[in-house]
Structure formats: C-alpha cells, structure tokens
Image 1 (cartoon, rainbow, N blue to C red):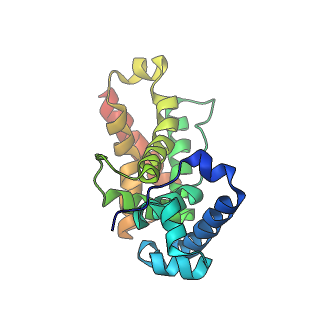
Image 2 (tube, rainbow, N blue to C red):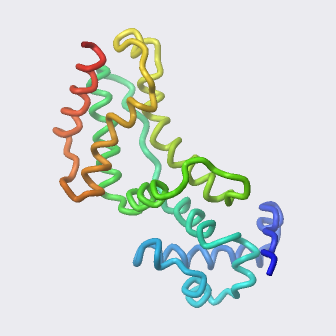
Length: 204
C-alpha cells in the first residue's frame, strides 16, 4: 500500500479541524513519551489515546519516527545564553553549569539526545522533515551559546585557533556521558574542572 502523502504545512495550519486533530495526536504522543519513553509511542497507542483515526495520523505524520520527532520538538526547553560579563573561564563555567542543570532537570532533553544518538547522523533522501528539524534544533540549541562565547576575536586571541564542535564535545560531552551512564550528576565543581582542563590544554 502506498503511503498517504503528507499535506503541506500551510494546509494544516489553515484548516482548524486538521489543527485540532494534529494537536490531539501530539498531546497523546507527549503523554506516552513522558510516561513510557520512545517505545510507548506507537500508532495504536497514540490513536487510541487521542481518539484520532489512523488514517488521519498518517495525513499529519509520515511515520512513527516523524511523530516522535515532532513530539520531542514540543518538549525541548531552551538553553539560556552565556553571561555577558566576567572572564572567559567564569562565563564558560556558568554556561556549562546551566547546561548540566538542564540535562539533570529535563529528562526529555536526555532522552532526545539518546534517541538521536542511535540514529544515522547523515539525513538521507526521504528523511522526515520533523526528524531533520529536530536534529538541527538540538544541535543549534547546544552550539549557539558556545559559539556566542567562543567564536569571538577575544576568545580566539586567548585560546588560539580551535574547532568549535570539538570544543563543545570536550566541555559538555562528559556531562552527558555521566548522566546517561548513571555515574554521577554534573555539579558546578565538575563543570569548573572541565573548563579548567579545556583552557589549560588550549593555553598550554
């Protein structure tokens, strides 16, 4: 059976009935995702809870992965920008601490990272739009504050030339790994230690 083509986003927005059915599907998926994780978000479970027909679901979403991605997009909180004042070290410590708190207090953020990590990072033709936009949003959410702080003439003068992506991975990667593995919760002291190691390596 050929998949039902998805309507254009402007068609979805212009028809109140479609907007309502989409909202009910996302409400149901959100409830299932937050209570049971990604495996709980099945077509049968979502349609049963939302009381929206399967055919209607497929008019809005190409697949379960598309639905899950759209649901994650609803739940991802924003990351505050880095502080405007202070030394580079102090601002990095504050930024990293904020990220650690977000990962600790927003389980859905961690679930999103884990779900994306299991997926192919190179989108292929036909990859659902919501999935691609979710990956882009997560990357942007983490990158933007670090770019804002580190991709400046002042930081480059102090630290020399370096890869921003690797810098972000060096700083926040251990926090995410520790939380995913249950080793520990990232504290401000941990963040300060990571920042000091990063700065020492760059300045050395």
